[in-house]
Image (cartoon, rainbow, N blue to C red):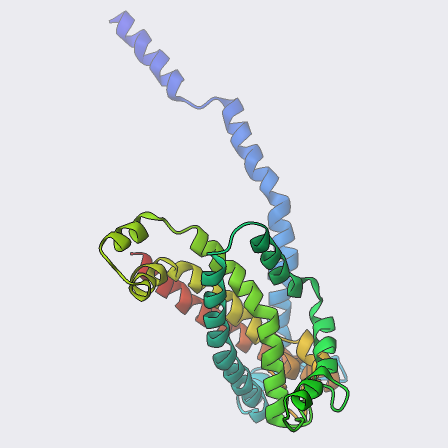
Amino acid sequence: MAVKDEVKVRATFAIRPRPRVRRQEMFKYVLLIPMFVLLLLLFVYPIVYALHSTFESYMYGRATGYAGVQNWIDVFHDGSFWASFGRTLAYSVISIPIELVFSMGLALAYSQITGFIGGILRTIAVLPFIVMPLVTGIIWKLIFLPNFGVADAIEVAVGLKPLDWLGTNKGAVAAVIIMDFWMWIPFLFLIILAGLQALPEEPFEAALVDGASAWQRFFKITLPLLRQTLMVAVILRVIDAFRIFDQVYSMTGGGPGVATQFLSLHVADVAFNQTDFGHASVQLFIIFVIMLCLVSVFYVLSERDTK
């Protein structure tokens, strides 16, 4: 019996964690404290402060008192805000699907190119990201400049009447979308190309053995396997479409009139030109909620496709 009791005592002490092990585990959590503090300062605090600003009234950029929910009521009845939301939504619906189609075509074509030429093409695709968005807007403004721009020269060379791209509503929107193509098609192309190169070869080899055509392989194998990659590309593109500012501001300034005054430009006008930070904060929170809902929908669809 004494031997059994001794064995039990040793087993009890063996399963108890040593104090040194506990200190090591606690030390790991202590190391995470600076990260959490930085997260609070850079992410949580600005959101809380901005939420507090939505309930304040401002005059000439200075808080003048507590406004309650009046700022929210005013913004929900603000026609100019919802008009800018409609312009942003229309711009996104037009540009994103076309960019995805072109990017997919380029990625499929590029996947057949290897060697030195493939490396050159990939380098060219990265070039639009080297240019700052503000500079991009200035470059394209010069391209569409009436009488002196490259666009007018091309139109005259092919026998067309030069268009006033930046002087008309439809022309300015079309110019912004063309600039957007130049910026985002290469980025989406690289994302889709990476997804294509990561696809397994076995399903395609089996489809070739079964005699499937190129279209059948694309719609039955490539697209389903690329669904996750395309979902990521769409999420990134939608987020950027709703926060586009620099290139449009330097290219059109939101004009002519308010033809290209998207959400971000409208919020900036309310905050800095009208110095009404309360209404601007409300608009930013509405945009935040809209983006959160869109990303959540895309995430749910993506998770459903994987199951």
